[in-house]
Image 1 (spheres, rainbow, N blue to C red):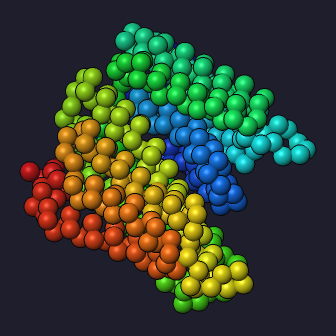
Image 2 (tube, one colour):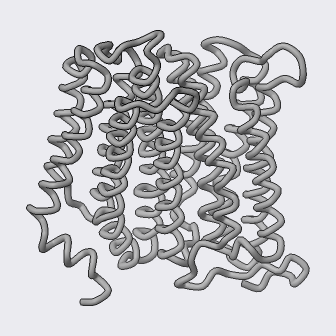
Image 3 (cartoon, rainbow, N blue to C red):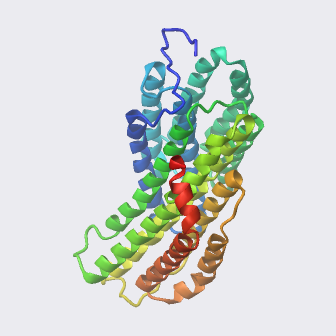
Length: 402
């Protein structure tokens, strides 16, 4: 990488790993995901859930570009370090303005405008550094150039949306995200992936961040309530669900996909990186945040005997996000592995069907029993896979030793 010394861009090595600065950068997204869960909990209408998903998708595009940037050049060196700090500041402003992304609150600055400008800054900083890095990489620069129109369209649509309300505003947000997705596909496969280890680790860490939010939601749901046996049981069940979802991703699936990404070359490697990681991880995050909302509501039901008792069922959107969020997470995991490895775990397809079929049943059960039912289904899936595919699991987990 022969960029001018004044910008001091240092290429990431082939086996480079995630830097401490990138972990620091993720702290903003820990806060942002908490804000999304709070936004969902305050209003569980279908319209607000849809808008929250749109906000989450914008946050994802704010984060994911820097996972690619940190893979091309070291995030803790030279101009890239400055860019990461700048993006971190803009992302923090986005998180602060998140509750006003659609509806401006009285007083102060316009929340939708601040949110849209923050998103523009995050994306502009990202593409500017990419352009500098691509100075001596003609194919890479051509890819960035093809990608620029989608960046301009998406940020412009969000700025226009900040001046509108209602259905028009929502449709403009959808258009902005469609532009991001299509632009990424149409830009081609000329992106650079220097370290498979870094790229896989980077996305694994953001899954941990999201699962961490589900655990935080358990605590927040009972933070002001006296400890009790129902709270203890519900908390342990919620933690078990998060742990089982961690297992479903990290025990074998993530390793199998990383091995395939490492074996692939050229355009195929970029396609796996884009489709299995950039695209497939967003629905995983959405699913975990849906789970977080459900867990938060369950804990408030079992812990607060002034508004609910232990026999009350969880109903409406929260029961759908509790079971449906986990189902969406598993569906994204299926695609994540299928695109890279070209195999589908039938046990996971069955689990999705079971989870969706159980929603009406769970809606008639006490909230704590519904959470126990969800835990049992996931535990059964993990137990079956661990025993049924023990030899294959051992080969994948000890890949480096063979």
